[in-house]
Length: 297
Image (tube, rainbow, N blue to C red; front, side):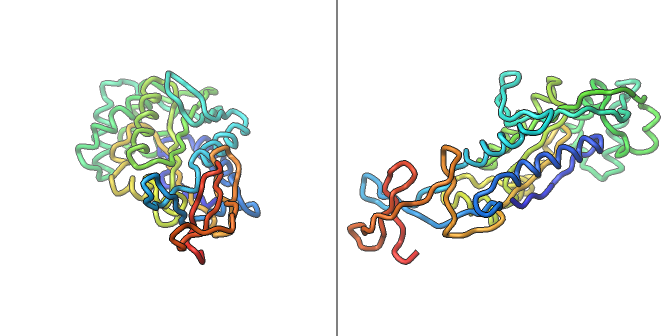
C-alpha cells in the first residue's frame, strides 16, 4: 500500500503525531493481496440484468479494506478498531500518553485576540475564524494538551504551561465512500471532539481518483479522495486538529484476485461458456452469480 500524509495535524504534540501516523501507515501497509503488496485487479466485468441489458459491475468490495484496516489498527497497544462511542460508530481510536508540556490560555476572553493574530500572520481569510474558533476553544480552554509553536510570538505569553502525564485520544475514520461521505466523517469527528471524547481526528481515504478510487471501484460511486476534498477546500471547513492520510494500491494486475465481501480474496471461476451474443465469456462470481467478461480480456 502506498501511503501519503496529506495534512500532518498542526498543534498536536510531535510524539503523538509521529506515533499516530506510524500506526495508521502500518495498518494500511498490512493490507495485502499478492506477494506482500496491495495489488488490485481492476479488470472491467459485466452482468446481465433481468431486462436483458448488460451493465458493468463492481468486483472489489469496500468492506475488505475497511475491515482489514480496523483489524490491523486494533493490534497496536492503546488502539481500538471499529467501536461505538457517544452513539457514533467510528472506525478506530488511538490513545497515547503525553509526557510533554501542553498549554492553556490564561484568560479565555482573550482567545479571539489570539485567533485574529494567527489568521493575520498566516494569511488566512477573515472568514476562517468561523471554523478556527471552535477548534482553538477546544484546544486551549478545555484541554492542556497542545503545542503553541505555530502561534505568533507576541501572543504566547497569554498561555500557561500544563505539565504532567496526560492521555491523548485520536478518532480514526477510514473512508471508501464518495466525497459527501468523507465530509460526514469529518463532521462525526468534530462532534466527538466537541464533546471531549477525542482530542484530534485522523481521516484516511483514497489519495486520488486516477491511481486509487476509480481503479479499485471503477464503476461505483466510491470515488471520494483527498484530491476531491482539496478541490472543495476541506481544510477550511475543519474545526478540530486533523491528520489526513491518503492510500493507493501498490499496483494493478488483471491476474490478481478480487477483494471479497467476507474479508477474503476470490477469483472468477470459468465455465467455458459464452453468452448468447458471443461477445462475452461466462464466469461464476463470489456468490455464485454469473459474471461476463469480454472475450479476449
